Image (cartoon, rainbow, N blue to C red):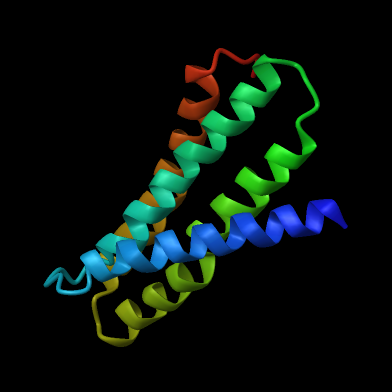
Length: 124
């Protein structure tokens, strides 16, 4: 039950941070979904840093892990918004931007997660 509470608190905090961040970019005139892209890249780096750190210290930090990784990063990043924005780009005939968004999100998301692990000197 304690882990559920930590996921709930982390997820709530992550969602609020995501909302505040999206307000900052709400007046963006870019066709490319900048807000979701940056949030997902920050989240990818954060999850790598957090998990890399927890592995580096080789200690069981279950409550921190569920709070920060499952809760905070899970609430902050958003695959559903990424998916919807990709579909909307296709529907509005911005096919080139849609493919750029999808490919860069996947490749850079993986790269940022790996970078987070690498920065924390864990064994990959």
